[in-house]
Length: 118
Length: 113
Image (tube, each protein chain N blue to C red):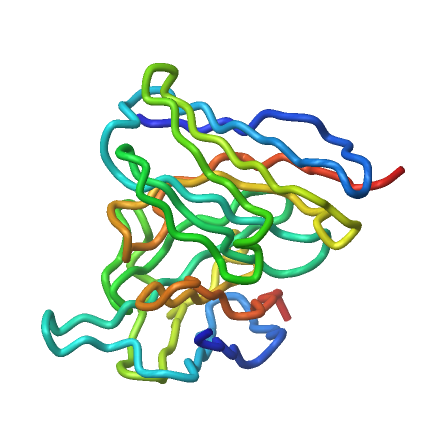
């Protein structure tokens, strides 16, 4: 059974870059679509974007200018980089798997809290 | 962006009673080319990631109890829990995945009365 695990710094300074990695275990990353979703503390879910195994991406326009999602099939990982962060980027970040570009997220990681603060 | 609006924001239902959550999209998420509504429902319990319950508006994910039913088409959708169990206490979200960005509703908090 596939499992996803987010990893990365829990604290990032304002104006710096938030970097997270999602490691896929129990299955190959070389199929499906791999997503990032975030949830500010006490608030709802925000779709960030996705990538597939060949590198095709789709980003939320509200984040597109600061966002890069990449995939490393040799490590069975995909990553998120968000530049110029502010306190508004403080959230639990989830990685997830969907069947295709227009499909829901069927498998979710446990999430990791990233706090933006000096 | 397609705006997803859920109602109510919170709901208290007695054990064994029916719970109904509504979701309205600002645009049609039904595609006649494949006869599908691009609408999902998730359940999120405290401290846990969301869990996919329903996709294509009415298809139940494997392992989801049959007391959970999704219905609706076009712009208006409903998640019904036929007989509320204690373990159903959670926040429920709808999501459209027909257009990018794949937007979520604001969530509905379901509690026991």
